[in-house]
Image (cartoon, rainbow, N blue to C red; front, side, top):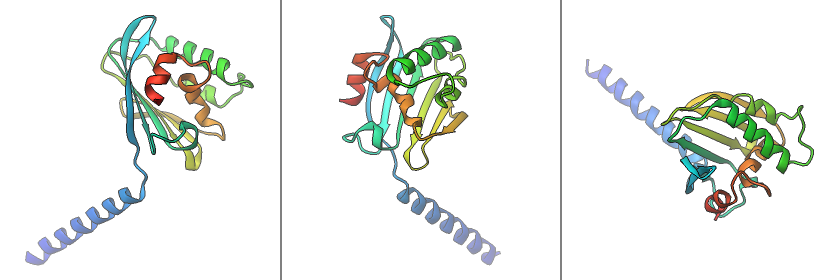
Length: 166
């Protein structure tokens, strides 16, 4: 019985060491800023910006935006806004763009829901997550251009862009 307990303790300790060494190798994202999400003068939630390095350009690193909603929002509103701001901010944006695959994934949200949009630079992967459930991903050389909806030259909200990036 004593040997069994020792084996369990050794296995648990080894597992913890593996987990801690893996997280030390990963470059965790830091919370950079949070700002209210205002849509037509109404506060519908908050947005939090995460990056490897908050001082570095969002275009050259792993980043994430978390959108926490305090109001219900229909899926069509996400899709319409995303398409509109992608067209405004990406010169050659068209219906064949891989970014449309992300836009198509949007679902309606209820108060309390959280969307996360996460970009991984090493594999050029963009994930869309709703309430910690992956809705889908794309891998594309320009996947991070999706963030131009909020960070482009014609963003969804200029004040939001300033609050998140400054």
